[in-house]
Amino acid sequence: GGDYGSIHLFDIQSGSQLKWLHIYEDVQDAVRDNLFKFQALPFLLDGTNDFPSTSINALAYSRDGKYIVSASKMTKTIDVWESSMCSEAPIASIKGHHESILCLALSPDGTILASGSVDTRVGLWNVGSLALIRMLEGHLGAVNSLAFYPDGTRLVSASDDTTLFVWDVKT
Image (cartoon, rainbow, N blue to C red; front, top):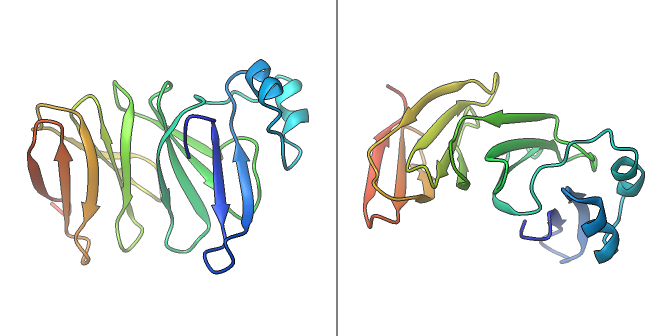
């Protein structure tokens, strides 16, 4: 992910690029940069897709390899993509933060998605329904890093306020 509005998937062993999910917000930017692959151009030009921001702040890959989750800077959304195909639009989008989302983490069992934001909150989302479980509040600065304990019962968040919080995500 990055400021160019695309997600690149690589084969770890060979280093070759497998897929490229292209999510430009502005067709003129995409044309200028000439970055079309996997037939993204027709979908951009017909005006039927509402692409998120050209900046991707965070990525998470589902344990089963079926989905990629991305956080978009400008739209403050979490987008879910099918990794088996190069979809030109996410299969689902989640909104709940008031500011840019800076980090994502999936629980080891794949049932909870955590998101950290400039709005100082940590969102917990049910992966099956994409419903908000709850927003965790306590940081005084942007939440910029998240990690689940190996057993999935706790989540650690790091913030610009120089604190680490350990949250019990199962209660």
